[in-house]
Length: 304
Image (tube, rainbow, N blue to C red):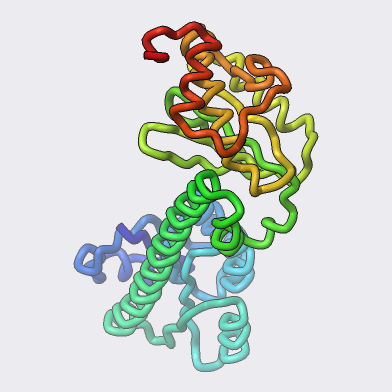
């Protein structure tokens, strides 16, 4: 529900707002009132209303100073002011502060309701824009996830679409590492030295790290944090400088995870630890790859 507040040093105005306006009819709750600017500021910061009606002239702190101060902490709050005919200069300053409307005195129920409807309309418009933005961002993220999965499967052939959706930081990428998880992928904190995107391919749960710097303590520290948590069982592929080698890191991560699962390891299994410096050919078929992995770990059932 939309929440409103009223600020005026005249008791009769506050009473009128409280009793003569049918707030519920507009889907609004009257969250608070105040009779001076100082008390009002504290109330606004506590209640965080969506709409504020305020007189311009008040003891302690005038309405415009109140609005200027409160708006720094409440950037989404809509402010409306009461003004007299002789206060036009104040009204101009109020508009400069972002006040969306003013109610000229004498104040009537009709004027208040008209101003209230205007404020509600602006809030609804903001919400629609916000919903559209969220929907657009969600759609863009889904497209990015698909493009990155295509990069892991097709390599350089999918790089152009990936670059378009990734954004301007694409040109900063110096390497890529793929992690494969047995359970849910972790959430990743944003960091200046890398960006990590979680993707899924069927039952495969992957985290793809795009490094803006190839060697950083922040990356190693985060991996160690994950590895010491026994709930995280994952395999990591090698880090490759060329994005065209992303499919190689992807397949290595899956193999490392399989090694780790078979051996009952918890935490991280690095492909370098189980395969050494010998790398499988990039064009090896999945069944050929599975045969070699099964032989290495002595998995007779898997080999069969």
